[in-house]
Image 1: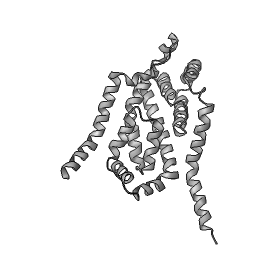
Image 2 (image 1 turned 180 degrees about the vertical axis):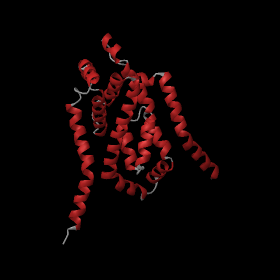
Image 3 (image 1 turned 60 degrees about the horizontal axis):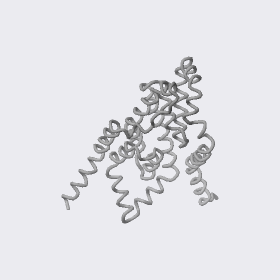
Length: 244
């Protein structure tokens, strides 16, 4: 006779295993890889990286995408440096494309792990709740496209938060992938272009200006995109008030 309680518990542990592994690797990586995935490491190894790229371009592209994907999927330190490296090795284009593909793939992996481990059960609990929590869940459900674009476009929203929250509110995978790919394009292009100019920065003995995304000529267009993404939410709220 099968122990259904034991089987259910085992299945629950298996469902949570991927996100638990990611969490453990993220914590270990935060302490052990910080010095190896920083700007100094890129600067000190730049010549070797360029020589390897020139001899093995396709292999370099594949290895870069795989490493960047792992950094994002396991929430390891160094995602910004990886984006800069994409520009440094491959120029703004196709570097930005490689960065976007890798970041989207890594984000999708952690999204799927989180949804498998906690998302379905948490989403069901939110759906069955009442009061403010239920209204928030309904608000997200009613404006998923806009909300997903917003959390990708707003620079202040941490990338890993934008990966996990959609998993907990049962966002469809295809919608998550599309909004992630398109939503990170502005920031990815900006930082990739910074990385494309790292050669001159290294020669001057300086560090790149990572605050460039907050410069008016960069920030205002991004805020404009945020306003465009938020427009459907505003219009829906306005229609709701008129219907009262």
